[in-house]
Image (cartoon, rainbow, N blue to C red; front, top):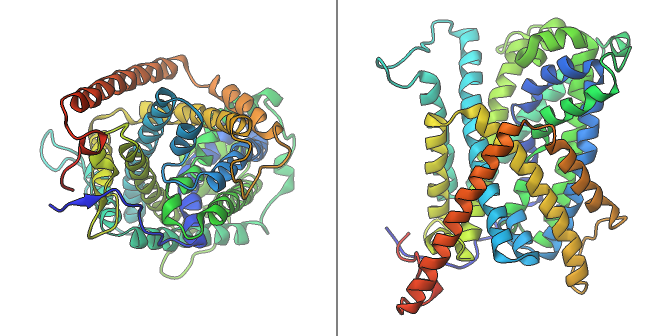
Length: 465
């Protein structure tokens, strides 16, 4: 074990690396899984659903871009809210964002496992999937745990290596999706888009709530602000470029999927919709084989890059909260040898591994979606408050048409939150209560140690990495 420090992490990521963190997180398994579910709910209007979600997401992305240029600190939304609001509000923001990223990591790890098994079964039908031992974990869980440990280790020892891996993996999956689009655009039957709203215009709203999770991820770019070169310029650029690129790819993929397989067949296919669409028009390719095999391969890469992105993001939120003494200070230390927030990475990984094994993953996914929407509401509110309270704050990037975008972002994110079931809202309130208790307990412990002459806040939770 070695002593660490509270110095800032090294800036080892370029604009491309930062952009790929956002794209890699957004283009996870969502585009493969949610296309069919959106078509089942909204019919051919599924493409409208993705376009509208892109518009709603852009409103908050503009707020993130302005805040990132003005407050170049690790932690993303947590750092911005801490600048604008009192400690309890910033703690809740950090507490829920950290939970969201860790929960997303568990989701992506299990998604990787399922996609990996499906992909390998194409070439090795006899791959075992039953229990290793009677009553023990299944191979799916073992694969999920293994991929988490792999990327946690990579993130713990080198930010540059994890960023480089994210860039390489994300470029591969973008290439796969563009191959799908290139073959499919010539097979599209435009008649599949009429009537566009067979289930009525209102069907778009629940479908938007269902698929909004596919647009989470650009905010992860802001969590590594201090590790990006020239962050005041590159972070806003990376946020906006990643979102534009992702929305464009989503719309092209959904257009091809609906235009080739049809909305009804897509809806019936459910989570395998894109793979079945690929099977309908893509020729067999050397080495890989069928179009379905290519999509399965792409889904594996998508979940890997999304997992790596949230490992990066969750650890940086924990690091920022530790550095601000809203969690144990040990979390806010940089490893003297690796130059990474080693303890924060390890702590986030531990919770992620537990979630993979024991937590009802569908419930966690719903909570993550709700917390994301509420987090986006607070970030938009932070833009408004800082514009009012700190008008002279240096803002290399200012969002256009202020205050319309943040106000619309608040209203529309709350509206989408209304389509999340009441049980999830109840669980969210429960998690907030747990966070409140943790905050009060930690605050009292910190005050008590200071009273006893424990060396002040710097010593609390300090020690070895």
